[in-house]
Image (cartoon, rainbow, N blue to C red; front, side):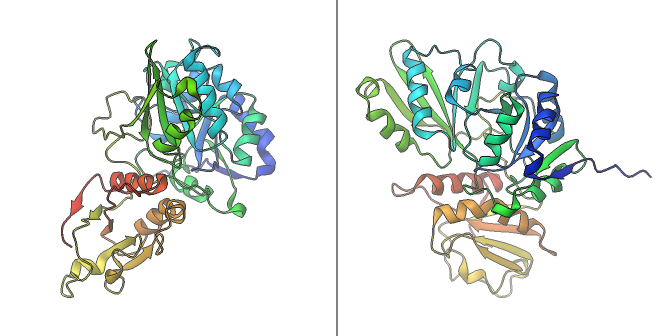
Length: 369
């Protein structure tokens, strides 16, 4: 029996120039962003893009986000002219939220490879704020297409070791930034698609992240030109079929999932409903939020609270690392976390946390343990 050689290599931020050379030549580099680690390739090189899909075992129906260093670079990838209403709206949103955790989806220019867009004709662009990500794009001298640097459907990585755990057998260099801690936002970017009909426009939030629909509305409302022109809505649909092309990544019903069964515990479940003789609790790992399940702490195999105070920023930063910790607890047979209910008071990261946990559980809610 032969053992597959481990090909992945963890490198220092001092190696960014060499990493840039790898990207230009069509090879893969995983790198930290403010959201999660990305698995990067030359965004205009079809064979390089194919390597990303192969390494991740990702369906070609799930598009990639193209990372750029400036709005000008994104405008070169979008079809909209700079002086059109659509182009000016994209410029406005980019000026407000870039660099940062917002991805903007718009009709693509003709030279953008179809494979990076899942053949939808719309390309997703983002300008990251993370220092290493920005330096890498500059070193590469090309736009970088990058989904999360993990196997498709698994928990997203926020550390170099997470990437290595998933992609150790792939030909990828992994830039180590552990000295600066985890990715400080901790969940993937908000994705917003802009569509223009010629008289009116729609901006649709397709994935929840640190930038909310209300933030986008507030940005547009500052300018008379866009006040009554664009409608902003949220459509974070859950798609079960991997053979259906998506405009945005992160749409699959099962996503961000640990390697052992995971479930949400209904918001109707009462904190005093612990049954001492229920042996299944003794093999359950509980990931809590705001002490909703704290009565299980002394009964569960292991317990962590993403934020006992209910701080959405703290919880978002910790959620993926905690899901990876939970799946590795010896003797664990399942993971349970609380169902998070929408409310008018919920901020953008609470909604993003709800989305990630819901997909990690494949939407399954238990009424009892």
